[in-house]
Image (cartoon, rainbow over all chains, first blue to last red; front, side, top):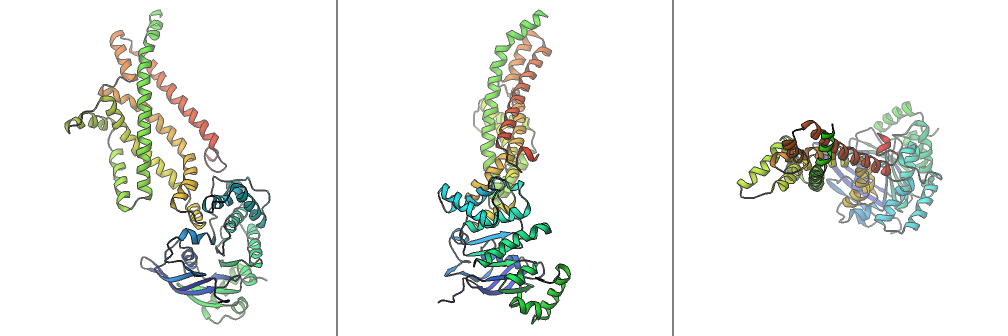
Amino acid sequence: MKNKPLVQVKNLKKSFGDNLVLDGISFSLNTGENKVIIGPSGTGKSTVLNCINRLIMPDSGEIWLEDKEIVTAENINKIRQEIGYVFQGFGLFHHLTAKKNVMLGLRKVKKISKNEAEDIARFELNRVGLTDVDDSYPAQLSGGQKQRVAIARALAMQPKLMLFDEPTSALDPELIGEVLNVMKKLAEEGMTMLVVTHEMGFARSVSDEIIFMEGGKIVEQNHPEVMFKGPENERTRQFLFKLDDLYGKGGE
Amino acid sequence: MDGRVELIINSIPALLRGTIITIQLTVLILIFGLILGLILAFGETYGNKLIQKLTALYGKVIRSIPELVLLLLVFYGLPNLGFRIRPFNAAVLGLGIRASAYMAQIFRGTFKAVSSDQITAAYSIGMGKYMTFIYVIFPQAIRSFIPPFANEYAIILKDTSLAYAIGVAELLRQGQYIIAVEYDPLTIFLMIAAIYFILTFGVTRLLKLVEFKLKVPGIGAESR
């Protein structure tokens, strides 16, 4: 049982009306692994992440987090505590300071005492490199700071898995680095991560495997070096070629 | 001139009696409107399809009927159906029904003003629907609620004067009684106007203060 994956996604399907968004997605993620999903927009990358914490209910398929099945789980709130979710829009609670943003879930969901929650919040904010924003409100933070608070908030719940859905897409170019650095650090600390991103440099240098999706299907999944040097699939090659045009050569 | 000063002084007790009725009406209509409005807003925002349709329909119908018609409908219509109702209660009910439809819109707007990103984030850390409402939506909604509420308060206060039409001895009717005897409409109506002004201005100022007390960078008073 040593090699049982942390996450197993099996034949996931989802349609919105007539639009088939996920057409049988299967993959797995071992503890400590870091996989990046890439692909053209509208191919269901975000939907995969949203199905994993069941913000979107899949039509069919199974999702396993260790020995718990998510699609049919009765108490989804319990499972969501184990899955950190960071997304493009940050979702910071506007009426709370950075520290209280991190504390809310600890206090109300995990029912942790105020002092303890405060200590955890401070620790997690430090971990993402934020030391002097405890009492700042979201409106007073930069985009990069906001996203790092959001990451700290997710980490504070002690998740087994972190999902990142285009975490840098809403940021000014000069703020992207600070968020990517935090993500790199998390990966080095051994956090299990599933990341949807267009940041090829990050994908290449941090991920253990790149999953290329198109039209609701996984076209190819492979080690980043293979993907960048000689993808097996012609479509993958075209897509990465285009990205090189847009964002420069990955990781170089 | 002396006669006028005397009239003013002599009129004060009667006008104050009317003012007290006006304040009672206002408070009761506010409470009625807030409670029913909150329930309607919940229904329209979080209810199932049928409840959403019904609450929206209620709002549309009520908001399309003149307030005075609603008031007369309650006061003269209910007895026809076999319910006797006192003028004061009819005023609370008739004007309260109207207020509820507008309050519902205000509540609904403030709920919707909380970005869906925050709700997604709350769910993602394991907060359920109710917890999300109590700790994320409500604290923000209350802050953006105050300015439109102050506006609605002023409307409700002034519209209590419609209760005059069904014989409630509120401020305006008390004034009319004095005018009938003394025949100095200018002085009395000016006094009435001044009392309405004080009640409106005083309370909206107070609410402004509360708004500033509650403000947080990015929401409420400062961002306006």
